[in-house]
Amino acid sequence: MEANEADIEGSVFPVTNTLGALEKEIADPIVYQLVRVDGDGRLVPATQDEIMVVEDLLEDDKCEPKLVPDTRQTTESCKTEGCLMERNPFQAPEGKLEYENPKVVAEKSNASVDKVPDLEKMGAPEKVTVHGSAPCSELSNIDLSGRTEISFNSEDALNEDTPSTSASSSWKPDFSKLEGKICLDNLTVKELQETFKATFGRETSVKDKQWLKRRITMGLTNSCDFSCTTFIIRDNLVVRKGEEQISHPVKVRISADPEVGVANSDSGGSLGDRDNRVNDDANFSGTDVPSSAFESCNVTKDLYAEQGTAKRVRKPTKRYIEELSEIEETSEKLPSSYKVSRYRFPCTESLMRPTTNVRSNARPLFTRQDSLGGSGVQIPFVSRIRRSRPRENFTSLLKLQPSDMDMATRQVRSVFDASGPQEDDKRNNDLIKTSSTPGWTKQPLIAACEKDEHYSGMRIVELENDMNEDNSDDNVELNDGFEDNSDDNVISVPTPKGGMRRKHHRPWTIDEVVKLVEGVARYGAGRWSEIKRLAFASCPYRTSVDLKDKWRNLLKASFVQLPAEKGMLNSRKQASVPIPAPILSRVRELADMQGQFQPILSTGKSSGHSSGRSVHEARSGYL
DNA sequence: CTTAGGG
DNA sequence: CCCTAAG
Image (cartoon, rainbow, N blue to C red; front, top):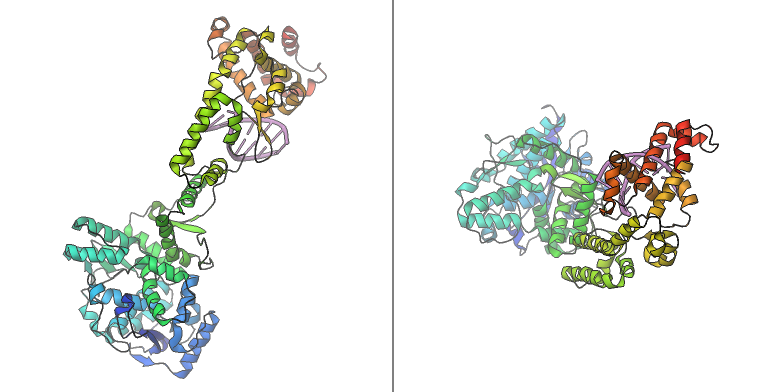
């Protein structure tokens, strides 16, 4: 391990003349210099050869390296792709050259070096050092070592570790200045507020220290940047993982203004502009500067381990996914949530899925990070569109019963208006196609309308039906045979999808029931499509499924009522029991025999002789 | 598409 | 009646 070629490790460290990177007014751009870290931690200017090597490597990584110093572009492109470059290319077998992402370094230097709270103001770092000194080096070191821990935990880990660690001690004079940790407890309210601002990118006027601390802590904990830097929060202290007690815990600051950072990352085109570049760097690091994909993975794991309370990662259910997506979908238009999603995305997402194109696409979110179980599970983004038939178009409902419908329409309408008058059309669509969040309110309404409708009108019919079972002639509605022919416009409605959709809950007339029973007796239960075709040819609105369902109900009813058939007869008028006893009896008989030998019946039914005697009896008795 | 079963 | 899963 120590024998290794670690001494050849090279790094490109950004050297900023000004720490004010955050304050965009930096006059001097960041300059990067390729250096080699000696085994003992000394920095040695890179040789021309090394530079070449690096360039090649960069080339390999699809990043245009240009001149060594101009690594910004490299960074840029990498960033946009959500992958940082440390990894393979720089882990050349011998003499690994590690390329330190300038952004990372820069950011951290800004963030951590200064006193946290005063960052904004005091941005002007006195520690303007040239080359490898103070601010930058500190951070870079830190970062380096931290990264080393994680990324190279394999065999290489130790190798890398040695140099970097030593390096930090040697050329980081300012390190001692670090307080070692951020102790939120010791900060004043104002400082906390500053920290809050720095952490969340917005001001807060909250004076409550506890609240502020909690918020900040949470913010830090949830920050991918944070996790990637291998720092953890322990008892309100920000400390480096694994060094909670020992070594120099580092003061960490999670940068600023995520939004800006994100925006910049999207506008990755402004490579030419230096100022932008600088800002970009700062911001970017702010939003997140995690290193490589695999690193963040490891970090995640580590965090779990650290937290102990790690909940098990649960795979979200389909339903869950759908609903979540749906919410995001609808809320995406809202600026705030929009920003939020975007904010999170570039952060972890881009790193987790380097392949995803995060550039300035209209909708870069294909997956989202979800804090499900606090684990940051990847949840695919799906559009929640009804997979099956769309719910009945409410315009169809309008056709149903003019009088009632007016009211219904108004109701529905009002809901729409309430939710937002702007996109009426769109909302209509939503209602039909998807159950969007706002739609939840609409759905019930419609249901109510429907119910109202048939309860007001049809219910009575059914009852009457019941009464007149035999002489249904006087009531047109009773005889569905011709009734529906005349009513078909009301009954079935065309759906956008193409099929004819029948109105909800068409009450079964006894006539239909009889036909059903007969059909079952003739063709056997289960052959619903047959029965439908033959016995219900005149009832287009009854589907085979309906028949089946109805049969099921009949069965249930028959078994319940048979024991007390007499009582049932009396209770015929009890609204809920429209089925005449005789029919139920027959149902039961059929069920009985079919339940017993349905298979036989189905085969022998056609010939009519193979069925059992009891079957024959039953049938003859009632038919 | 049809059937079967759960909701 | 609606929705889905199976065949």
